[in-house]
Image 1 (spheres, helix red, strand yellow):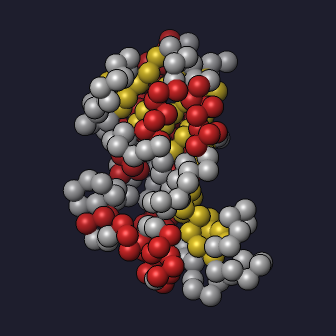
Image 2: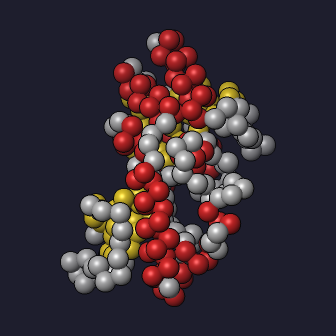
Length: 229
């Protein structure tokens, strides 16, 4: 069975109504990165950081998977599908994707601020100040903040190296190290970039570019791949 590796970014979630960070009207226009998404922010004002992610979590819970998310699930009928997402929402899982790797963490989980191996599934929409892990440490969002290492990056690199087909969806390819995954897909026989503003780095040329939103572009590519099997 051929392996399809899918790298998704904020564009696929934006079609479900989840505001992106980088686009006009995105979240960073309301908050400074340094205030809510760095280890320094957590140290200086944990209440603001918790509130920021509690607001985002409520928005994500209210959102629904879109046609792009759903189309990827259809590929599992005939392919081994590995989704690598830069997104912290759970829309891929809720759409039915069986194998999802979150590079930047998962907003529906919390973890110990002292021991990163202590991770918990949230039952509600908020992490409150004073909520602690079993070791007595304040719980924080299970998110990779700016300035922190991306612990799942090596796993993502190995998955990409083994791809027969690579799909890149809804990403500006401006966020590293995730954008660097494209350089590890030498084995892939077909590569797709699906994004309305798709632009490849100068060093990469072997992609089929579909300049459409994920909700229309992904079903189009999925239909093509399934019909070729």
